[in-house]
Length: 469
Picture 1 (spheres, rainbow, N blue to C red):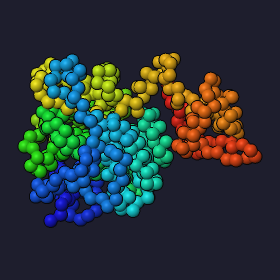
Picture 2 (tube, rainbow, N blue to C red; picture 1 turned 180 degrees about the horizontal axis):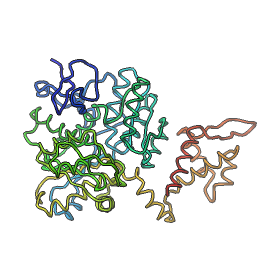
Picture 3 (tube, rainbow, N blue to C red; picture 1 turned 30 degrees about the vertical axis):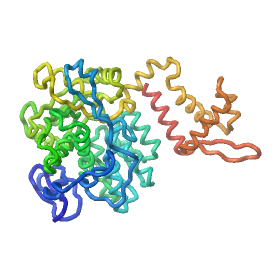
Picture 4 (cartoon, one colour; picture 1 turned 45 degrees about the vertical axis):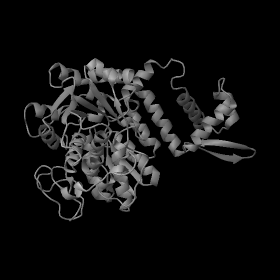
């Protein structure tokens, strides 16, 4: 008997061949991998606490591509818990992954699958973290990474994509438009489809978060997840269902799904007891990571929340940003606004008596605040503070000076150094060359410098950031 098969979590359709589809041919819902229950009963996790510890409950790949993802900290948040009146409050800190988000899990599995199957190019529609992660993992093995992005995009995530040398194309105003174009581009080019909403491996990768939480602590009473497409909260529920079938626990958590007030199609459907998410004509939130007007996994997410006896709530952008600062100040974790929503929603739920003070609550921190535009604006307001952004500013000055005209190290020190030692300038130049932003060439007795194509793109990205601020 096969260890797993593809099937539909909504209508039950089963894919009988080995072709990986991304939609159910009957009801058009996203497909899932279903593992045989007898197989699951015999699975034993082996090795250190990393993403690939759970290889036995992931679809098979022949070549693993890893940057050290997974095994992230489950942080006991006592200071925040005191404010919230929670005695057992934890933060699952995915900012510690290689590109600072939980999407490194999906990138590792997806790129491993693409590489194992002999693909040399991938295509992905992304509003940020998935694209940044895929670009990094593709860079490791020299697979061409093509990213389709909406107009609204956090500049920190865009900067990662550029530095990892992805091919980036703006594809409309919304992530929904980008996804449609990614489907079309896949058919035209036969590139590997790596879009999170169109590749069931993304859910498989994210379910390992549930395994880690269970092994690091226990099955919590509540687990709080920010929702965009609905795929992540579905993955969390799927992980706990599989742990139950493996016989490792007889308990399941209750799910709390959180969306921004300005874009809450799943929450509104949950409140109205509808089976499908509402369709937003226009979204209004600065939390780009969860700004999804037509959530592809919305129907599945609603089903999972109800099956868990959970709840879906929305929170204002103002409360998200307030919580972002609070968790950084009190727990030393810098979360992006969408992740901070998983904390901002808790006080009202405590006040309503939905969560009790002795409940074990885990909030999922999916990505770092360093990648989002709100922190860039904050830095701009405090840019006169000593040392803030000094190294970045120096490297940017060097890149601009090299772009203007042919130059060399000592000449740069005279024009840019401003009190720095010659050695410090040469260290910056060494860093820039190692990162592939500049190259050097001999002419006479001197070695001159020039920008690479990658250096030109990075300098343009920095200029775009300044324009944003």
